[in-house]
Length: 334
Picture 1 (cartoon, helix red, strand yellow):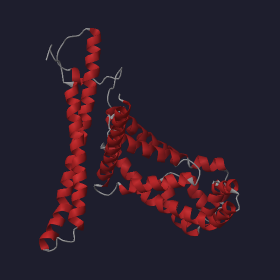
Picture 2: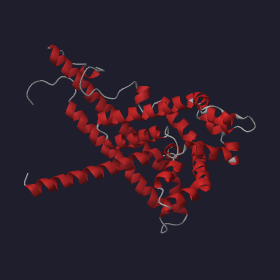
Picture 3: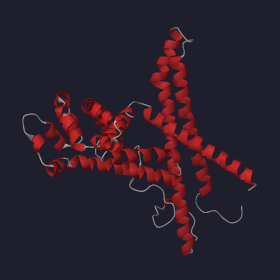
Picture 4: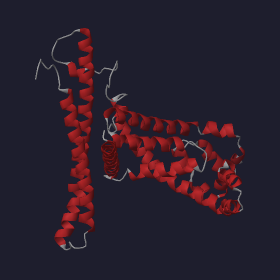
């Protein structure tokens, strides 16, 4: 190699990061496949099978997932170090500096790909703040999903036949207007005594104090003006906006680090978060899907399995695109 290398080998760091990431994905995929074979195999019976399944579900699988998670974290750190080294080297090269050592310690934000945006407690999905936020969203999902499904079923019971009749008579536009009528959705929810009796905890947990008041019985709160309700729901809008912002930040940082699977997953979460602000049925549907996703991720190992699924899907899609591209080039003689 000609010349003298100061600091870290940027390409070497990125190659190692990619290898760590692929190994983590492989571990997660193997963990999922083994879990299915171990727990669902009808051929393996007896006390030995019971003991091993207990050890697998209690310890072995968790260790594999922890190892995969550690590899993912180290892969992200290596990419950050590579970006910092590259940026620091560019700055030193531009200034004519030739002092060796310490180049990889820069935090540079003045040019180039400089690693994740935001402080670590925000950008690191495993930080205490982000872990706590994920737990909060998971608990909120457990509370809100049943009520979202209840709203859909109640609206369908009250207005489904009418909408179907309009469609059958060729009045599709009128049917869409009924389906998208926010007042009809709210009236259906208020008329549901079961929802009104049990939705308070969910509304308070999510900061939707206007919805809580609107569902209150014997207070006349259902007649409050739209702006008053919006104001009382402002805390909930703020919490929802924070969730959307964090998912958007994850999307940007995943794109910057070249992690396509995480970028697609975080982008999908961002879209669901934005969609939940829309009037029903779009808003309630996005709320149900997003809440169910957050609740499922509370299950140990589920988040890693979802990450592995997105990584696998994007890898397959990328390979397919590459194959098609090569076929097109070969066909046209490029």
